[in-house]
Image (cartoon, rainbow, N blue to C red; front, side, top):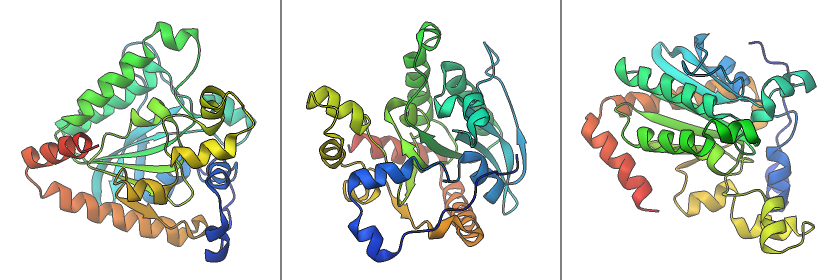
Length: 272
């Protein structure tokens, strides 16, 4: 699972101030961004991938398995977009099918059984589109994940590392906390889709992006996310720092009584 992509240079503070919401959308889709596999390689020790939903197939759009973070056993699940053209096709450009969400839930229930925290990396423009996905119950698979994650008796942290599109993203984001990197997005619909539906004009994507309030600062202000992560050019220091922060978060959450953990997670979402 060696990463293929090159590190992207971080914008300076002055450049970040000038970014519009649609600029952030464009950056969240940048082909040079680290994908979920790069994050797994960067912070998880001894990762072992586990495949299949035990019902239909394995979905390469979702990569999941077990490993350690600073020695702590964890379950890690990521929506993977792929790097080069062949890789993107293999991973369906990060559009997960029902079997992907069912695989993710299987791994999360396994984590609950063995008292492992769950770390999710989210990067998708949305769930898989197509007749096959609908026939196999895409909406039902996502809905079941929301229900089961709400009551999962182990800590969950979801980190948005690029695009966070609609239910495809939410299907891995019912967590104790949600973090975002500073040029990630999270929205009910893409700016292009919003412009076409609400403005009846696909060219109004910039207006739609601003109206959706999909950037990390917007979501932090609305308490939809708990933390915005400075990207620092996605350097090795960036991954080392994130690894330490994730370990500290899980250490604190593992010390919390399970009933309290689940209650707080439920209340977090009810507060919306």
